[in-house]
Image (cartoon, rainbow over all chains, first blue to last red; front, top):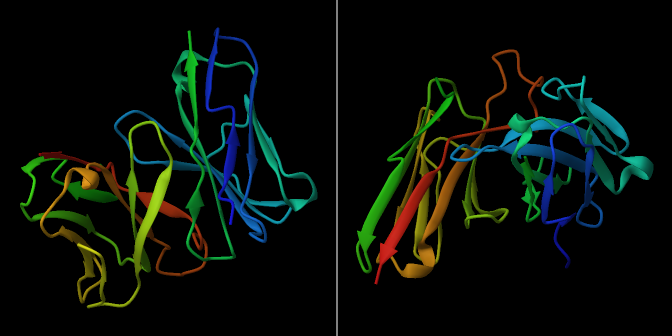
Length: 112
Length: 117
């Protein structure tokens, strides 16, 4: 069974540029999560979807971050414009409702 | 301060040695997950504990959740270089009213394990 797929794996951009990350969850998993992991820290939840609905986006910086999960499958996380402090690893995870979360390989973002 | 504290922050052991990593919370843990992460990679699920006093093992790794469900430990027996990586505990730390953080995991800062051959 395929795991969580994320792309790109690495992204280097200049500050103020936009960037987007894509995630394809494990087939059948209705819950999808986006986390941000800063260097030397554990992941922190940005947004959680149940099917197409964002049920927890309290930690998403809405002035520059946006996310969508069309048709309740794939998801995209966007940052516009990126700031230096956004450099981090962005992780996508999926699960059945309230079950174990399985993580993708992450996207390492570097903002110059 | 962190809601979930891991100790030690880093650990260097010789191959074959046993080791323990701890994960401590001031709140009741409703579900405690252990993950392993290689540098620059995603998190790999190891084990999940839910009941006070629960203990699970997989190969040479054993995880326990204490009776009060506020501390968990991860023990590796006869460590190997393949055990090297970052170990993270993640917990469902919903409030006393329950439900509002259901499904949201709070993570510790991780423990970096190095195993010398």
